[in-house]
Amino acid sequence: MIRRSPLAIVAIMLPVLLVSLIGFGGYLTFTRAAIDPVTSADAIIVLGGEHDGREAYGVSLAEQGVADTVVLSDPYGAKDPVMKKYCDKKSAEYTVLCVDPVPSTTRGEAIFTQQLAQERGWKHVIVVSWRYHLPRARFIFGQCFDGEVTMRPVPRTYDFSLVRWEYTYLYQLAGFVKAGVQGGCENV
Image 1: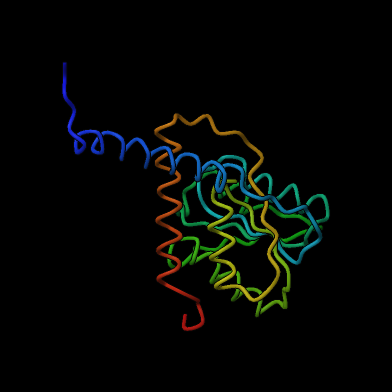
Image 2: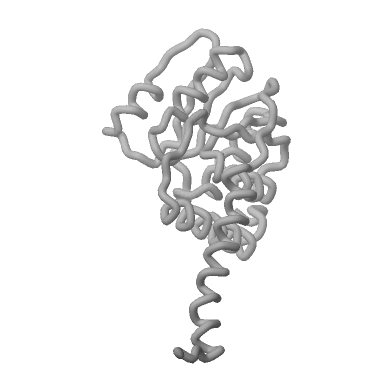
């Protein structure tokens, strides 16, 4: 008969429990994040990330008359073909602005949104990002933007492995901790 020590059982069970809690909590918090209904706004802010249809979605909202300004976060550089396509877009119905966030983070995007809102008198923006990023983006925009924020996900599905989801949840949790430590954006 094999005798197992309590320490060995804990050493096995603790990582399994931790991974399970992060996976279940992450699923509920991030993968099933709340989505706000689309309403009229002063501007549509498309956060940086993958070129996964987010730019097209932001522009499509403007084409539907949701807002007359689309702001694309553009940390990609002048030679990026996707951003060149959208940043050079001309329309009589809406304006496209491309802004390089400083710092090149969600916080930097919230900061430039606040600055543009002050310059242009915006009170309400729609923020577009990955669905699993919406809770953290909402928190950061709450720290840095004085107006109303509507959060909208990029309309897509995610074919991630369990390991990739676990990493994504941990990354988002770490981002929450960082944002909490940084605090508000008043002194920026």
